[in-house]
Amino acid sequence: MRKPCCDKEGTNKGAWSQQEDQKLIDYIKIHGEGCWHSLPKAAGLERCGKSCRLRWINYLRPDIKRGNFAQDEEDLIIKLHALLGNRWSLIAGRLPGRTDNEVKNYWNSHIRKKLMRMGIDPDNHKLHQHRPCVRTPQQTPISFTANSSESKKNNVMSSKHLPSSKSHGKNHANDQDATSENTALSFIKEETSQILNLNLELRIAMPLDPGK
DNA sequence: AACTGGTCCAACCGCGACCAA
DNA sequence: GTTGGTCGCGGTTGGACCAGT
Image 1: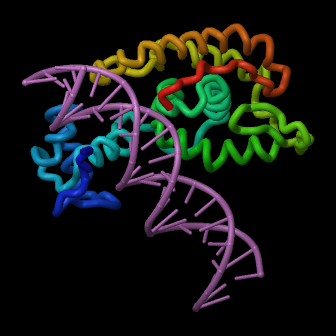
Image 2: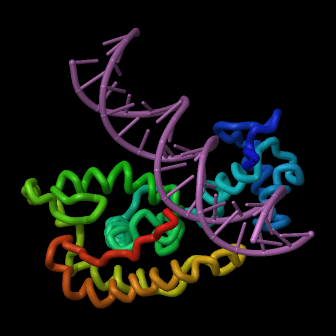
């Protein structure tokens, strides 16, 4: 039933060349984002629309912030993950210039290991019962420290970091998501002030999503 | 220098949601 | 209500790179 979008003959896969990048950039500069399905043909690219969208969003967009994550960003990711789970797009929406893919990769390659080293289950953010939290003096207690809390709270609540409303109006489908997200974020405000010095024992459970 | 194993990240894939016909 | 087209998300993979031997 479902027709694979990228199985056409003559459709490139794999790494993007500079020429392809330039074509995509030039096209979007003129015509803007959207209509990904028809974009490749119009832009003279032998790629599927999905691939173009991904390349643009994750790599070519001018507002992409590249390079290492700051400590504040890492802190925020951990907090938001504790509240939202693997909702990478929502988490990335709170991190200006970061993409969901980047956040997801950073989580899997850095933060997950860091939490595990500290005896914290990265899936539920609870301390492992039988694993003492071993920490060297240099290691911060994952940054739920009072020091950076203010900036982080401001960051979280700043409306300019909300996901862009231009995203095709499909996100209104996520009204429930948005509601739960807002609920979660309001929790951040209240809860963080209470738990900042209590290690990472976050207990805020997201509503189970039966669809996933 | 050559090999090997681990890490990281860009890109792909599958699926669900939405919308129009 | 159903179907087909499209978009967006999250999980997974492939390969480049690096450190250790």
